[in-house]
Image 1 (cartoon, rainbow, N blue to C red):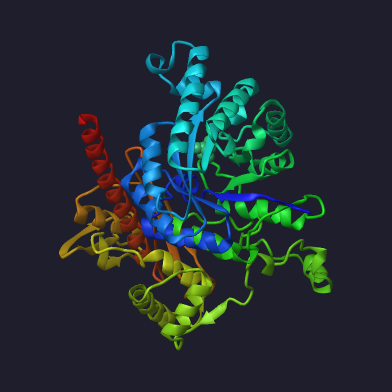
Image 2: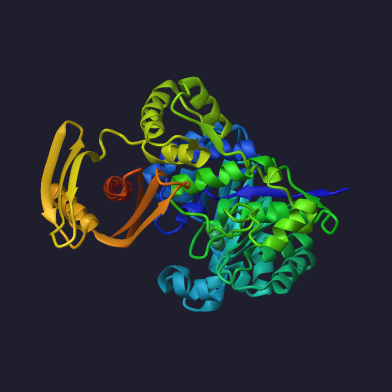
Length: 526
Ligand code: KIV
Ligand code: ZN
């Protein structure tokens, strides 16, 4: 009999912490619904205290899905209260609270005045704080998870003490994160085994693992954790997350699945939804999946060399350990064309995992027909890109209304733009080093801003001359980066859209930050 591994998906929380990957509320709700279709057991929907938009997204997701919704909170009352307020209407809910336990974090993050004058005193304060805050969380919510941040580099004896206290206070899941991706599989597995030996009440909680990928070992470490007693694994779609990312959900699930002969563990994941989910997350976050990425990369099932192709034709298993079908990769990609109707489009979008109301359908259909006029065949990836592009643009955002760009050999590139926001029109012209530079300069002048471009990338979404071009632009503003995406069969137009989208995200963030500061002042005054 195989034992069930709980899949805790943190794409919407740790995954969203990937540089430049900010998702709006509607995109998060869409992804949450798709994660439910994928049959993950728990969705970590966000970190509610960190911004009003995070709070709103967790609250909205709580009202939309029937699986467990977890909200993250530092071991502080204000965080735990915000987490609870955001999830309390969910059918199934979990508060996930954490505090740091490694000496690196304790020395680096906790001030002498509040936490104690030396390491020993600080450790004692954190132990008590962890106990108290789990108890507080438990007074609000039956299902409480506690994480010992940087457990991978935490002294084992101290880690065991904190874990025991958290279980004593009521934690039902104990998460052991390798926050910095420092450990290697045999060492991490041994850490889990040793905790099982040392912590007297460990049988009252589920052990969870949460591994980062700084050394490319996140999946291997997670599996080592499972082999040594962990029964929950925290992971993200496409392995996105802080720095080098988190353990990839699809890799863990397929490793357990393909190697059933070795591992006596199973998950509840509907593997045929893996590819759709991967594409949706990539489309909404703008984080491209590397072509050779295991399980979901464009080349994961491509056989290039003659010897391989010949072997495959004779017997698929010569070079394939899982079928594309098993993860939802559909080889027949041609689907719609200019004669396809609204119903056909809607049905295909639903098959690809999107929920779409009539208003959205009208907008997508309009864009679809324009695209179908330019391209003979509209592929699934084109549709995904259409969904991730403009469906959720609000009239309060800057929208490209008109642009003209001139460039040529020996001439100075010039651009003119007209941008709309609500009923206001802003226009200007500028020159630049190339057509894109001229365009960005014209946008800057029209909006009266100057942005620092961190990266600019163009790629073709599908194949052929009329393929959609997808442009991704990352801008930097103070300590934060914002990525915008734009698509069009004209890559100059796609560039303008991408740049405006990044500017819009920065604006939304600045607005939220203002609201948050105002709220903090009000709390202080009380
Ligand atoms: O990596 C980490 O330690 C985390 C915790 C908050 C669980 O993301
Ligand atoms: Zn993490």
